[in-house]
Image (cartoon, rainbow, N blue to C red; front, side, top):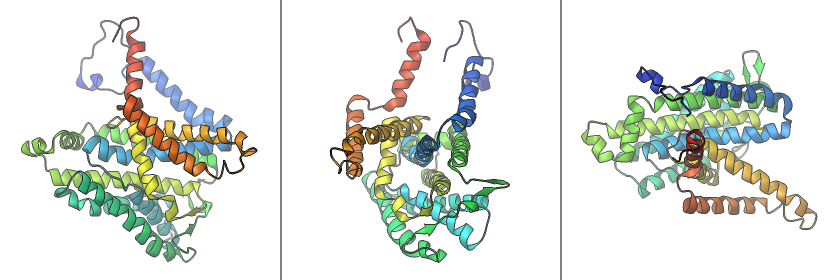
Length: 356
């Protein structure tokens, strides 16, 4: 952050403010103006759909960042609370006829409680065994609970598939009907989640999570209730996953367990590995990078479709190849992720012509 020579802060609040100078205030307000007015006004539905996918990835990866990046709890089953929250929200509107916002809260709480249930073994296990527990959550939730029990409850569903009526997603007089409406709702949710996470990390809870991540034995010796704070991390991360699932309903005509596969759980872990583990903006950079790279690959395959008709049919295989290759390259050449590189670039610009 560029500060004039002699600038100092007279209080702890000013020193730790997000936006410390007028230039940063102007830059961030300009960004909000672009996101909330310029893009919805001048960008077509195709690119708005692309940005909605980026936003969904950001929201979905926020809980993974909280667990892995801030608490040190490795998860490979985060698609489970995302799907559980989505189904809980949809069924609340179908069966209980509750408004979307209330169903949204129900979905978040249900997803958080599901994560707590499968997070209970974290009191005694860690590392590889915790990974196996989260994988069990993935397969038990998606393949059994969603597919065999929750899906058919609506009557309109078969095999866990629910039809979605756009008119159901109303917030007061505002009905989230179009791609543009879903985009604006996504921006609002992303801002709320980022503000929530940034402030949470400054609290006693956030510091306890980071202490557990760095050394859980030392944290317990200092009086941190390891079991309580680990379960709290699972609940908050699950609730954030449920939030992502409830948002994604507004972009779908049907919701199915196939939307929340084990591959999606792995994808979210890759997002924070590429963006930066433990970084406040790591999952944002990772989501932009991976989603953008896949879009470029899709455009690159279109000219080849005339020569090799099977090129587009094999896009899913190419997608997995690109994802795996990106993970390998980042682990070798940029293990701290895009956020660390961006931090270095900003320092270079702010301190130029002096070396960092």
